[in-house]
Image (cartoon, rainbow, N blue to C red; front, top):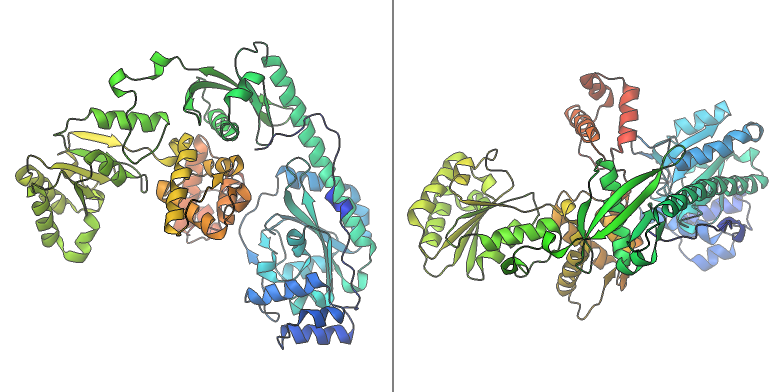
Length: 620
């Protein structure tokens, strides 16, 4: 999230500062075709010579990248990614502008395509029947990826160059596009200043006019103007709500949405930049879950506060939230003096659920057997090690597949009888079959040394797990919270995992800071793999960049895409799970999935779109 001026009427348009790419050689000439053949077929790569012959540098570089991707100029097909959101504010803004130019669109004998910032076609406006058929025959339709990595050199490279681009005939990488001209202009959101997509024009070469690119740039300027007007109205509504609430300036008050934050002086002093970024995530989740009561959160400086969120509604949509912040009195939050500073050695966390786990672990009887329950990757084994102390050993149930059940049980008995061990940690008990679980239970009750404590980890609750017989032998059960329920701890977890990753990479004294926009993006993920997945992301980022400051732009593309999806609330989770299960059972066949669900295929598409179900990464 970034703070933006809320009373500025200036609209900075990048396109006015950009110039089209001019070329010295006619792409339809025999000379050009010889040059193209030299690059794509013969592998000529001397850039200076080719540019001297008249090839635009941007076209030449795109040809080379297309070859590097392994694309073929003779055989190419756009990648269909599934259903896209064709009713987003961005698409609505474009449609409101283009629908007023119907006559120009018809007379120019061209088609317009709107893409997102990844080059996926969101919507098209085509009035020429033959051109419409040409686009359809080549798979250049909504939901298709027309990025350079998919179809090579087209006007889609405007997303890479961030400038208006026209590609004429044989300048396209694919031979099949030699009869058309494509022009593209990136669309920049006037508030966030980020490229949100592109508007692309397709026409036959014989119908191409230099005026078309100027017309396209004019359309983009108007689309950005609509986005600006919409954003300005949202900010004014946000400001009005803030002014109405900010009557008692002694208490922190914040009005915010995903782009803007307005605070009074007390809140500005209290909240760090990371707190400000995460506060919107707290607010959006509270509103989405319909929470009316205040909830406690821990700020990055360790301060515990209570926040109460109220949704701000505009004329047609939600524009943000007002958040009232109150300090939590010490006696109300803190445990007795003996437990105030409880923590687990080597582990970090300040959120309420993590603190509760630490207190429960510290209060446990030293003789008790402890079962740790939690999702995959939450750090159950690390928690067990922290409680057990240094002189402990881990026995993984998955080793049974390697050494056999008898040998594994003998190893367990030997560990339980050892006077040299302080604890035995039986990992992944949910992998045990019922007979082996019963044998493990007998071993614990029969062979345990008085000095040896027993811990176990499982992903399943006792009453539902495969190891229910084993679970009944544990006096204490500790639930390790998933990462999505302790995202207050993201900053400290990122710091620890970053330092660990630097050691693995052989880097010393590296000071890396995760900026608020990156932390905020990561807080939006569901983290199915929990801490393990977070560690993987940290390693991927640090392997790809040596920047001292990690921004959202440094995150992997798939992470950013996942973070941008809408969160599901209430019955939406049930609907999404049912649709996903039906698609998986149908092997991805949407017709059969719709029949099994008892709904129309069009309804299925609408649900997929509205729920933000990603068909590109799901295993169907």
